[in-house]
Image (cartoon, rainbow, N blue to C red; front, side, top):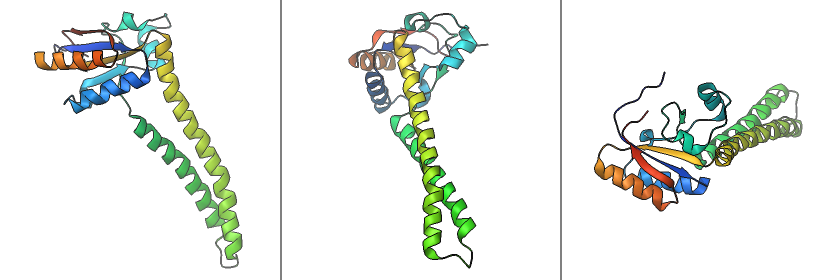
Length: 183
């Protein structure tokens, strides 16, 4: 069940991730909370709410049943990728080091074990990090194929309505308008 509240919300459609991201950053600089900004949910959330019917961005912009998601900055995705790759390198190195750092092992053997154990783990970590990046990129590409990237922004008063619409239109937002409810 979708909970609809009587707080106005500006909505717009963007044709590129770069325009969407610039609009979101400008909205946050203008004082909008990240919790007041939402995007269309992922493919699984869409299928769970709407079934497998074909959808187009303009069909969902005023639909309270459209699933929502929070914006994740590119920097945060980069940090996640680095954490995955680095974590696997550390884990592989630690396992190799723990196995070979016995009193009888030499320094050269220990360094070789760390490199051998850490190398494949780092490769696995890098592959998983690439998968995260691809999933993030595919999330936006799929929505663009369906007519654009949807952005909703809660606006508490007329001045915030005006400012949100101005920012979204300033970043090439299409069909930017305000409806009198939000999710």
